Amino acid sequence: MNMFKYQKLNFFAVLLLCVQPCIAADYTVENTYIKLIKHYPHMQVPATTVPDSVIAHKVLVYKQTKTSAQTLDIYQHKQQTQTAPLIILIHGGGWQSGTPALMTALAIALVDRGYIVAAPSYRLSKEAPYPAAVEDLVDAFHWLKNNAAQYNIDSTKIALSGGSAGGQLAALLAYSGGIVDSSDTNSKRFKVQALINIDGLSDFTSPEALPFENNPAKAVTSASKWLGGRYETIPQRWRDASPIFYIDKNAPATLFINSSVPRFRAGRDSAIQKLQELHIPSEVYQFDDAPHSFWLFQPWLTPTTSVIDEFLTAQFAKTR
Image 1 (cartoon, rainbow, N blue to C red):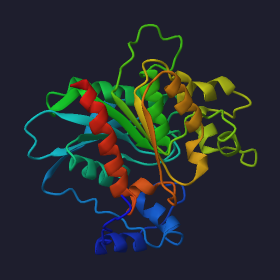
Image 2 (cartoon, one colour):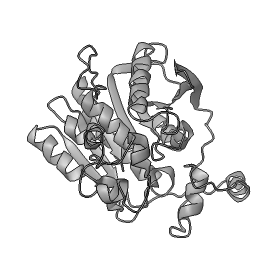
Image 3 (cartoon, helix red, strand yellow):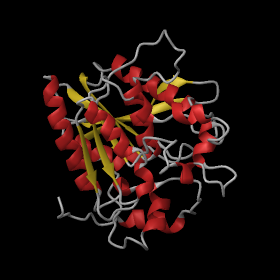
């Protein structure tokens, strides 16, 4: 896994990087490349053109809210003749930016390993605060389950995954079963067979997270904007949005894939301890020298794909 074949940066991708303005609030592959390349001169932007071997069902509306339509993209192998496991990939962006397009390269790589991949949108903090994003993603999950036959999805083999804020959301959904409102006694929690948390925090309230997510030097942080207030004013909501507090006997096997930036694994070790106490499998793959957002670029995309595939192959084998 330490030997990588770098993909050459496509000429048109270079041109795009050069001519597009970089807006700090926008979390895109292009803007992130510009930000990181001086620190990681060997990094490469992977191809995101959908190959002939892959079918991409784009912008499928799974939900209409009062303010927007929420959509998802589904990627699958063109020659797929049997049902295949599903990976739901949730994009990041500090709960305030980003689109499903961020996950295109990883989705294509995972389709090559035999998976169907769905990348959903969700309402960002500028449109609606927590728990709107969670509600949207629950609806996306049920839409995919209800339409499993149409896309040849094996609904007994579903994994939730995401990067950064998407990793936190994936973990929150996987551990809570989609129910984050303790007063909700009517909804039925769902179950997935695996979780892959890619550099997403597990606990907003942890000592590792608070100095960043509740930074006193900032009037508003990305977390406080999404959660609707600072930790000291609404601590219960910060706790409610923390995946770690939902870990119980129903939690799925979990793979943590992390950069070398400690901030983005806040609460991970405590989560692992809780999983171990419940005898639920967990694994960690941590890069020695990788930036946050590593999964968007080579040389980290290929080993990330391999680690996910190895983990899911083992976990899905248990559901046969």
